[in-house]
Amino acid sequence: MLTINTYLADSTIQGKGLFTSKALSKGEPIWYLDNTKDMVIPQVEIPEDLRDYLDKYATVVPVSEQVHTLYGKKTITYNTVNYHLDGDDCRYMNHSDHPNVGFFGNIGMILRDIQAHEELTCDYKLITTPEHFELLLCTQE
Image (tube, rainbow, N blue to C red; front, side, top):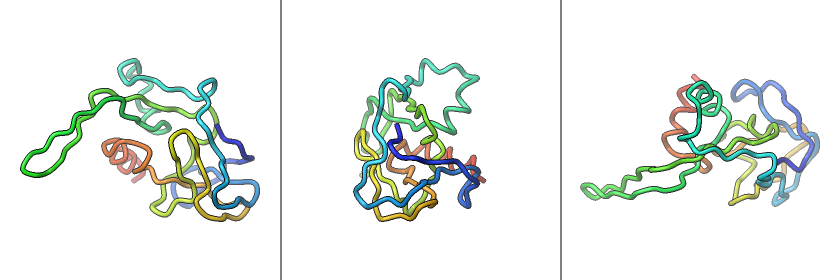
């Protein structure tokens, strides 16, 4: 759940983006997991007609995984995953390889000082599975 004032606007990255209303300082917490507003949904419980929406706006979090090594290469197989859908506009935060927001467990923090009206971004590679990240990249083209 976002703890700061934000708004949605056209993004130079992709579609709509999440923007801050005021300047923010490095280290400032701006988000926390709120189990009363954010949804965690086991993938096996998602109706097929909702899958596209959740693939676009949710993150995919592994619940259990198996690690395999074949010819010296480590591969991870996710046995069970949950979809995490924010209950507010945080779901509009776009990906950046140079993000200004980082997520550490159940807290989101500002990674560098940012100006008012700057788009808030995070690195999707760090908050979802590699397969989901690849799916997101394909849908942005």
